[in-house]
Length: 592
Image (tube, rainbow, N blue to C red; front, side, top):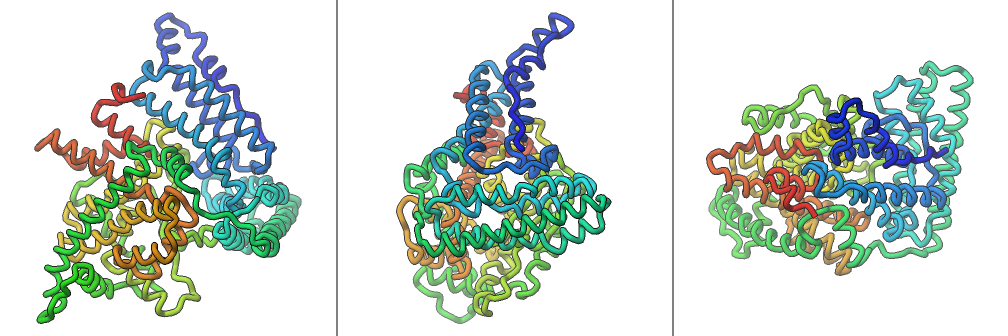
């Protein structure tokens, strides 16, 4: 059952009525006060429209709701957006404080983006992987926000509509992509694990009544049947029919999606050109470092005359040091304390040891997208919950050659950089700071380019601060790693806009990016399943680094790295272009 959205502006205005004194009345009816009231009511209404997203942010009032993704729901979403945009139009941008100007622009982008996704991109028609109850139910089961019995009651209510949910999913699909169909099968089969032994055991040991236990057990069985029916539909009807559309979205949609998702001063075409220039600079630095390292590792031998061959030779030597096949996840765990100590000793920023970071194997329902590592962080309403660093173990069916290729890509040097990126002071640290932001809007509607850009910036910032003892070895492999972020942008555009083939992309990644074949083919897979996201790393990093260097030039000897890092992170996960305005004091002048 779906709750109706609130009459937003009316509630916002009502919240500001009847002050007791004229001065209070003036303050309460000021544009900023009205906008603050509006934001509070908007966010509550937004959670009713998006209960799964609410749960992911630690807001659990609507955990029991399951929205059926049918035409009626899409119409309700469209009405919600139209009403909200009308309410936003009642606030003049110039009348608001700089912080609220940015919040207004974020809300407007979120709403317009939501309609573009539904009405123009229409992923609900062609992405079977967008339907998966295992993901949301798994997060509820593993959470700590409510006692077990209450979480199970919410799960019971939610999955009582599983059959209708998957029936709507089947009805929605029209000429899906082959790649997203395969992912939908893989992740829903993984999602069946959520409705298996662990959930059954939780039901048995819970404080639910016997009647509630039976009801939930029956609903679990029905949900498993619904998931299995959906998988069978994809396997036996969608795949054999062979009616697939291309995974490529083309130039127009790519540029539009880039504008909504990235929210950068750069256009998609401009950042593509920036990436090409940065690639050349990285290759130049790699050539210099490889030339210095060659005599150390190949004494008495003649260095290759070709620069790419020289870099490849040295990189291949350095990547021989790596974790064992069965010890990859454990190697990640061992690294984290070292990073904590380094950040503290070098006073790079203030850490919060009370916020738990848990390294775990990636849950089955999250695997298959081509991302070997990720972070699942609690939202601003559940700040004390675990942040999970998801590390995908090597597949059991990989040959020794495939495993060696992957492990060499994530060698002893690169694994340290990966852990900086994903954990400390990368994603984990940034998202802890984001949860402290006084603006819920900036935390909730996080910008992917800022989030990924910070993680890439953190890698360089750590090495600049002395991590790895400033050795040519770690800098060479950071160059290689940073080249990967750069090539992400290049191949994202090349695949989606220029129709680059798998052979062309894999060859580029292996030749120009010095990547192992397993990594290159995994990146191709990921690039077929996403659009624009691969461009977020380089775009955000480029903007953050440019901002820091601009402030260093402006402040000279007064520049303090710790102050910069902490001030930058204090604005939640807002787009870098807006954080730049706030830090340079130009928000009011640059707002449009």
